[in-house]
Length: 86
Image 1 (cartoon, rainbow, N blue to C red):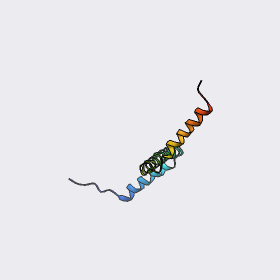
Image 2 (image 1 turned 30 degrees about the vertical axis):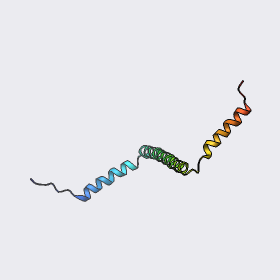
Image 3 (image 1 turned 120 degrees about the horizontal axis):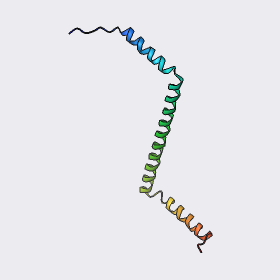
Image 4 (image 1 turned 60 degrees about the vertical axis):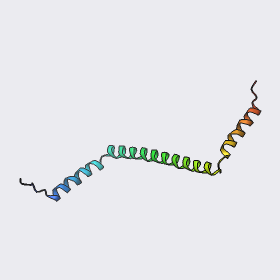
């Protein structure tokens, strides 16, 4: 079995031409940038939600964060006092 010899300069040249054709297309550039921005925003949102949720869970377990329950309870009292149900 005889192997075919590949000229690396020709292969690299073809690859470079394909890359140039792909990256010089405005539609590809815009689509790629748009999708990249969407996934960056999605990743940042999910990551921030996980970090805040984990921090809240840790602070609640440490007993530092009972303020949230009391805060909403106080709002409920104020609303019930200001707007009595007839």
